[in-house]
Image 1 (tube, rainbow, N blue to C red):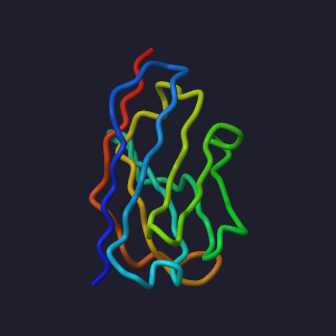
Image 2: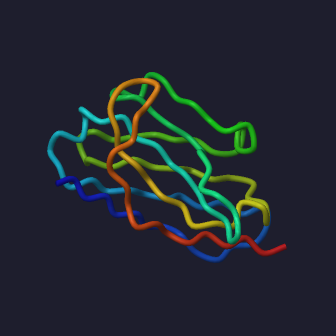
Length: 119
């Protein structure tokens, strides 16, 4: 069983930055592609960003391109989401996910971390 634990969420003002982290419990972390999703109140979960096994390929939702950066540290079994120039519409619960293949097919999910951006 793979466990994913997100951290780094919080309450910030518009224009601020946050970095989310997702620690993965398995030493085979480098065998998984990783992604970030988010779900705002009353809305469906949506894709935010993805990164392949080595970090050589990334994908982003149009809404976050140029503001968010996904990265991974395979030595620390951790994936990150650096979020800059945050907007109130970025408010959501952020989830990380682990999967296989590219494009990714996600099979493991974390419990989520709340990000709230005030105007």
